[in-house]
Image (cartoon, rainbow, N blue to C red; front, side):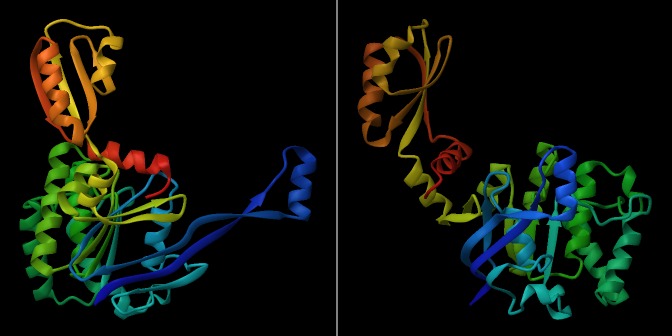
Length: 326
C-alpha cells in the first residue's frame, strides 16, 4: 500500500501587483489588485512504504511547495493528499508522530546550547521516555559518528556536525516518512558522503520512506532508484533513474587525447563536439554508432588515450528540464 498519495495537488498564491511611483503606492493602498501565481499544478504520484525517491527540479519548480503541502505546513488550493493514512494539513498528533521534515537551510537546534539539551526538548514533545531517549540517542549517535559532540554548544560544531545533529533531532521520534529538502546543502564532500551513508542505513534498518530533494546529483544516484521531475509546477517524469538515463541519454561520451591538436572542422565528422581543450576532445556519439565511430577515430587520428563513459546525470536531467517535457 502507498504511504504517500498525492492526487491533482495544486497550490496557487495571490500576489499583490503594485505600480511604481506615488500614484501606484496610493492605488495599491486603496484598491489592491492581485495576480495568481501557480506554484504547483495538478501533481499526482504515490510512494510505497520503504521507498527512497528523488524529487528533482530547477529553482522555483515547486519542490519545496509540494513538500510543505505533504507535511501540512500549507494547505493545498486543490487536490487531495494523504501521508501515512493521515490528512497532513490537519496537523493531528498521529500524523506528526509519523513524519519529519529536514530543510538544509533551516535549523531547529538552539545555537548557544548543547545539542543534547535540544534533543531532550524534542523527547518531551514526542513523549519519549528517558530509557527510550537514551537508547535512541546512543544508536543514532553511533550511526552518525557524533560521539562526544552532543555536549558541545551547537555554535562550536562544524557545518557537517550540525547537519548530522539536525538529522538526529529530526529522527529521534523514529518517523515512518522522511521529507528531506537539500539535507547536504553546503556540506563538504566527506560530510555529504557521511549523510548519504547514514540515510541509506536508516532506510534499510527501519524501512523508512524517504522523499529527497537535492541539487547534488550524487545524493540522488547514491540513494534513489526512482525519481520525480517537476518543472514549472508540473510533474513531467515519474519513473526509474535508469530509464530516464536510457531515454534522454541515447549517446555516450568519448574522450580522446590526441598526439597533436586538430582544427574543430576536422573533428566534426566524428560526432557532436562537447568540448575541445587543446589536444583533449570530448565527443557525444549515439550508442548505435559508438563502435563504428571509435574504430574511425583510432584509424584516422593519432590517439594517445581514449575513454568511453556515460554523460553526467546532471547533464541528462538538465536536458529534460530545458525541453520541459518527459
